[in-house]
Length: 373
Ligand SMILES: Cc1ncc(COP(=O)(O)O)c(C=O)c1O
Image 1 (cartoon, rainbow, N blue to C red):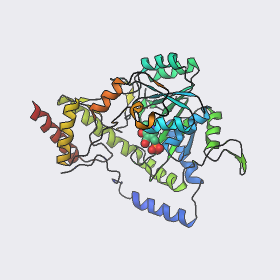
Image 2 (cartoon, helix red, strand yellow; image 1 turned 120 degrees about the horizontal axis):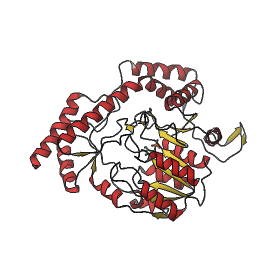
Image 3 (spheres, rainbow, N blue to C red; image 1 turned 180 degrees about the vertical axis):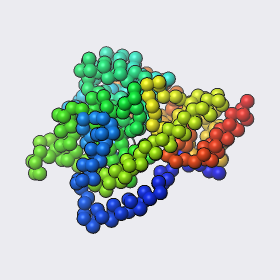
Image 4 (cartoon, rainbow, N blue to C red; image 1 turned 60 degrees about the vertical axis):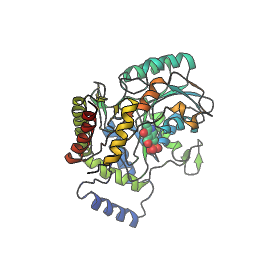
């Protein structure tokens, strides 16, 4: 039996009928930009994340760019960014006109390392920093990151593309961020029917700038207070996300259940399955295991043979990407980030995977481990 790495077509019964109905009504009414679907979505996102403002936009990369621009980051500014993240985080800094400086990863939680971050602040004197909450949880030192940045007057953007539904100290992780972002890319925990994103903040001034920038810097219909761009979320997209949100608790529950089952089973096989730090309730975005590089190569071969999907998230550090060399202005260590990229392997995890799919994955991984002993 083959098992996909992710399957985003596992809709709840009746979901597609409701979606088709919405598409039909919205098409008849030509409700394509803005309107009630977008405002309802923003209200629901604001309520869910317990933030003061939720401003939807075209995608998660734009959300980071909007956040950077809102905190006045632009040409020549220095921005700290984790070595381990998706490339979009790095890109957003460059696209905002600023210079990225990468910071080493912590081997325990696989997030940006707080100690290295402190050193990077002293060494580079950054104008802003981005912390990424990777894999469905965040740093053990999240509170310290926030407090240090506040103390040093360094605006901190939290890239939360992967952590919608994640709780930190029992509350939505976005709640106490200065400014944070998410992505509605279809494979995300709250996934859309295409691209989408959102910026969250409790600061009214930042929210106002983000909203303006995302709509051509408009202050009136043909009055432009800023040079922004078009990063509006389509109404259809918002309508889809509103439908998903109604079912979100079940989707989240399913992911978390399998994430926890993985922890239990893989641990009993002696596999280094990464557990989120104690302050977090993960959202089940990603299963993360570290092997030796040799073992990973062998396991990849077996998984391919058996038709089991897997991920390598991510296969390289940011500073090592060919595209980085013209833009990166400095870095701390990248030893851990490189080691993780050479040893990480992610097993299938998605909403409504079945028990038999889960059992199949475990059986194959078990046969691999037993064969090695
Ligand atoms: C950590 C991280 N940041 C940013 C993004 C960019 O989001 P999008 O693909 O919606 O632009 C993603 C997702 O793809 C991501 O995983």
